[in-house]
Amino acid sequence: MDRKVILTGLRPTGNLHFGHYFGALTNWVKLQDEYDCFFEIADVQALTDNFNNPDKVRKNVRETAIDLLSVGIDPKKANIFIQSAIHEIAELTVYYSNLVTIARLYRNPTVKTEVMQKKGIFGEKGEGVTYGFLGYPVSQAADITVFDCDLVPVGEDQLPILEQTREIVRKFNSIYGEYLKEPNHLLSNNPRIKGLDGNEKMGKSLGNAIFLCDNDETIKEKIMGAVTDPNKIKKDDPANPEVCMVYYYHNLVNKDNCSTICSECKKGSRGCVNCKKELITAMTEFLKPIREKRKMYEENPSLVDEILINGTKNAKKVAEKKMKQVKEAIKINYFE
Ligand code: TRP
Image 1 (cartoon, rainbow, N blue to C red):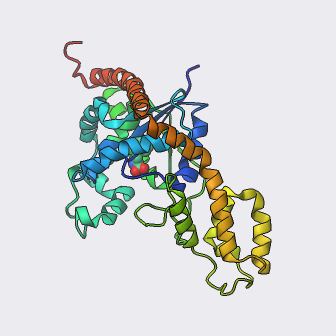
Image 2: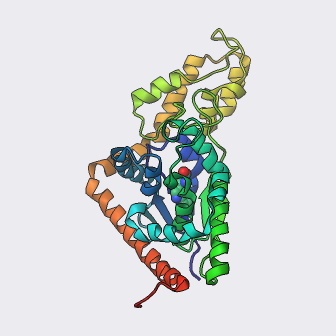
Image 3: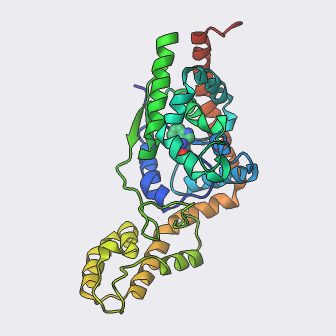
């Protein structure tokens, strides 16, 4: 039997960090053994709110590819592809746009939140939101359905987008016939990763992230500045590890030693500076294989190109086939 198809995407707007790694990427690496995986570098979507900064998007397409490869996405098992190269996605977006009302797009909670976060581009009240950004859920529906995708691994914030994809599919099928597959989401059971400042979410724009490509010096600075228990004043005061970000990251990269760290911290026999130094060592160890892979790919840019070209070629084949069916459904297959 054919394997189920997975598609998920990332906007190439910056390097990937620990939040991506533990929240999503570890899961994606596992999925590539069981499913036909398509990992989309969503440059078209990135341009919806970075249309004035094409250099940034262009640079990050390659960076995102290297990030994905360095954490273990294997080009022999999975396809990494560039969204803009699959013209069928853009084409399909046009036809889907007839099936979505503007009011429905305005109501999408994810879009709403994002518009309000981007006041600099879309205005204080979101009054300057563009057609393109407002419509990105439509284009994302095209991303997903052009691959006959079964499962979409996403974080909770993307669920309203996926719901809208399903609505588009149902509407399409009810008008034109049962051509499209309704996808399901695959929520990762990995938790959201907290930031260095103790914020519930690690984020690039929040300035509290540890990036997978951070060098030793940066890692050291960041960990040394991480939030610890504010009630611990002196080195041997007992403290509460539950409110300490250093302990929190020990749990991610140094699990084996955590019960000792926890009891020493509670007793007051563990100073924060030492504890941070141990975390730096553990994190360096953890990043070692990721850095080795990164270095290899950075030194071989043509290999990265080849991987992207291949992944895009495979994706294109699937998308062309689906687009043919869609054109038949909408009766615009004039000379075929
Ligand atoms: N919107 C997603 C994000 O911001 C990225 C994305 C683009 C995506 N296309 C997708 C996710 C298709 C899942 C499926 O994270």
